[in-house]
Image (cartoon, rainbow, N blue to C red; front, side, top):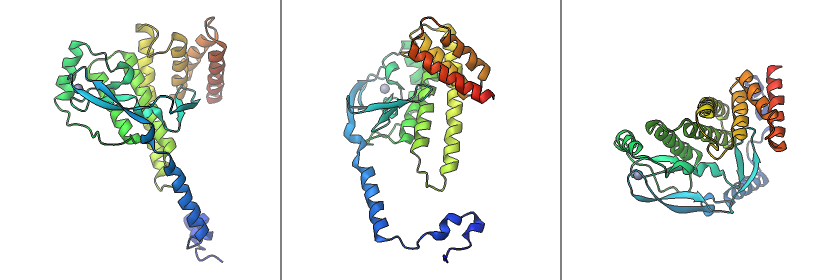
Length: 279
Ligand SMILES: [Zn+2]
């Protein structure tokens, strides 16, 4: 008989048979597990890259992943790349620690004089600085940096595609954070739910922005050709529950003569997911 008998009525039946004291072997296994986790130091694959801020003209350093030190292992259906041994996406936002100007790496250099003024008046004037001492970025730090980049896109009246792409990257960081949560933590379920809500809101915003950009901007867009953006719109619509729109974009890809077999394959997968959701 277990001394914890009775916990089942509290929904804690699983705990009835645990040992009160960890055995030496269990302790050792636990320690080894911790050691394994520690083995990879994220900072060991990072590099400080020199940048010049196009808004305040100051030089600063930003963290970036050394080339050849990460590998893409898979991709989610909305094109989010997954890397090992670290989530490279955390390092995409560049933040000037002096004036608060921030943008995704691919957009950072491009600031028009009118935008410079808008950033100085609406960001720099209130910016109190950002911690630059961390050896690597946690998900929370990465999310804050990307949020600052998103705020900058609004202030500088960026193109819809840049706003959409920044929302998409933030959504992917929320997903990455959710995947990295400690599943044994007491607040795991509530944290995961909260992150999922944030992710969905960001995906919906990304969808709206890309719809706008799709009819008003030129391709390639954020490094994606027209068919890739069409495919992405289909999947973003599906993920945010707009199944009619999702179907429409999916057929555009499937009936396109220019579409490669590879992207058609993916579109067929999304079509299956849409049909599942409709059923
Ligand atoms: Zn600056």
